[in-house]
Structures are given as structure tokens and as C-alpha cells.
Length: 265
Image 1 (cartoon, rainbow, N blue to C red):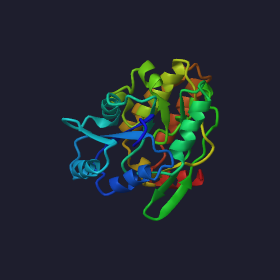
Image 2 (image 1 turned 135 degrees about the vertical axis):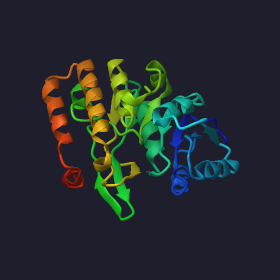
Image 3 (image 1 turned 90 degrees about the horizontal axis):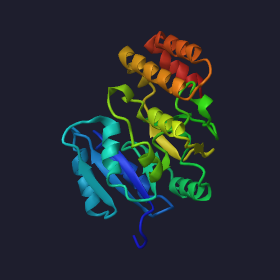
């Protein structure tokens, strides 16, 4: 690249050899080109690392690193952040697709609006049969918008590096597993930072309709406990009622969850 990068893309990659090239090609198709990519293999059991290394041989703006063992996504992204030396940091997953104008529109917004620490967009969810859900997002999320779930999608986000530094990156450990982004946004809002959602889908997430149904009750109870901490920390009204609603969802039979997700389209 003729100009120094302004964006570091951080990617934790794990057992995604079959989809990684498609994800990386979507980065190469970006209309905004001033970025570099840090790929961190988190102990894949397939040939994900080999695919990443081969790609980096012909793409000098890609760096491949490796964890000594599987340490989960939050710690993997913190490892990537050690290599981020740009003003902005963007997320990307190894089985998803960034639409061509994603970086162009996200960086343009942040350049124009210094009052926001990060930006994200809604996602289109797809599987082998095509797009099955198109997401929506609150444009200007406030503390009260943390009531039901994280008001920002993680994978399409672009964040000021200074914001990551302010909250010491991602919190790690079992407490935040599968919800590291929710807790990240919580830490940023508690620190007085704010985010914005572009009202356009700029990212496609490869998503299994039945994934949530397969989550263990133990995992979902852990999520409710973390949600309670977030509601209290942000002084959201009526936290007890919100948590009771979350607990009631755990009682929904797993076979009904895909149907309920479809109804949210």
C-alpha cells in the first residue's frame, strides 16, 4: 500500500479453514484500502493456520500470529490488539463477509464525529440457503437500550484505539464467554463513551438458525448474571423485572427458539 494504514482489522480465527478465504476476499474488496489485518489462530484443529499463512505470503498487509493454546475469543482479540498501532480498530470474523463499502462508511463517520468512540452496523444473517434474517439497530443507543441485549453488533464494529485502551481491551474469563462484546460496550458506556449504529447493513454473518437453541442452560444462566451486573452498573430502571424476563426465556423449550427468532424478522 502506498499510504500508511489507518485501520487495524483484528480477527480471531478458529477452525474456519473452509470459509476464511471468502472472508479475506471481502476485505480485499473494500473500497477503502488503508488497512492492515492481524489474524490470530486460537489453536485450530483444522488447517486454518496454514490457510492464513499462505494468504499472508502474497498479502504484505496481513500479519499472522498464534496462541500457544485455545484461549477463547476475548483473550485472542486482546492478543491482536497488541499489534494494533493505528487510530482505528475494526473487527472481522473468519466465516463472515464485509460488504464493499463497510470501511469507507465507518471511517468517514468516525472522522466526521469525534464525539463517538465507535460505530457499528446491522447484519444480515445467512446460511447455506441464503439470507434468512436482516437485522436492525438503534441509531443512538443510550444506557436504557442495554435492557434486552447488546445494542451494537460486534463483528461489524470499528472502534477508536484510544477507546480500547481506556477500558483495557476485552474482559476475559468464563464470566463473559459468548458475550465479550456486550461487556465491552458496557465498560465503554460506564466510562462515558458512546457509540453509533449506521442505519445500513454493511456486514453478513454466517449464522446457524439453531445455534442459540444448542446453548447449555448453564451458559444462559451465566449470561443472565452478567446482564444483571450491566443493568446495575448503568443504572437502568427496573432491573429486577428485566432479569425475570431473561430468566423466563431460559424456560423456553430449545426446539421453539428457531421459530421465535424467525418471528423477529
